[in-house]
Image 1 (cartoon, rainbow, N blue to C red):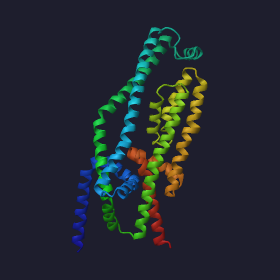
Image 2 (tube, rainbow, N blue to C red; image 1 turned 135 degrees about the vertical axis):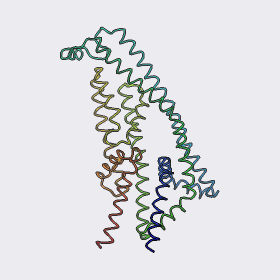
Image 3 (spheres, rainbow, N blue to C red; image 1 turned 30 degrees about the vertical axis):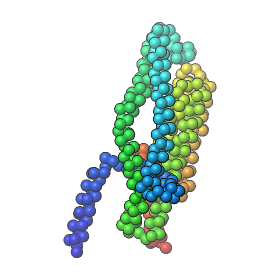
Image 4 (tube, one colour; image 1 turned 135 degrees about the horizontal axis):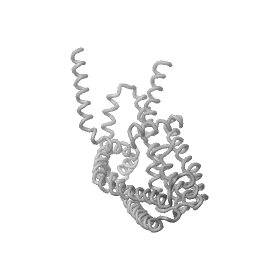
Length: 346
């Protein structure tokens, strides 16, 4: 019997390693498929109950409608962002020509007293200051265009991963209850503890995804409005950048509004620069630092401080999926501690 146990354990380990090797390249799309299937499962159940078309067709309808709801707005947004990036690039080219034509005059991007202050402590001419600034402008413009080019080049891979995610989500909708039943039989816990784990995992995932999208949308909207009010170009582009970077807690949106504020200070718009900085710190920043942990902690019954650090640590360890994986790991650990406490200290 002992030898059989050793052999079976070895076979399970080998099979587990081989399964990991096979599925590792598809981990990201499978992870997102599972996450969104859990979040949107009530929608699938609603379609199944209202249409009575069976699990296959109901899962197909759910995936198609979800895809349309995501793809159409993203296509419209992407078109606007592409226009704004091209506009920034054109502005940069015209600005470089203007500065080059006035190479020996006081830099047009600096107030005269700032240029004089720099020359007092640094041995640099007007031409050199202009050259430094134009090089920086060209680098930023090239970076934006390069980013768009890289996005276009990776578009095929993104479409492939999205197709895999929707393909997997279809089967999770249709057969997820069977997979769940198998998992419930394997896990060596009582029915009550299994239900506790499942309930907590579901709550955390739903709160993280829905709360994260809501917080990101609020931050992107507030940031885009601030850039528009400050007279900075491409508010949709910068608002969308804040939306994406909002999933990096603490510093994400600051990577956009801090350079914008610095730019306003450089060109002499001190009121606009100060207003944008204060808006970023006390409005956009507080939405992220307080609202996101609060939403997740309320849903998962976890302390906001622990949620905050779990997100930061998981993003550092796993990338973007850490936004969900961090609170999820923390929640599972909390449930395990509760079960252990009930089993051995009651």
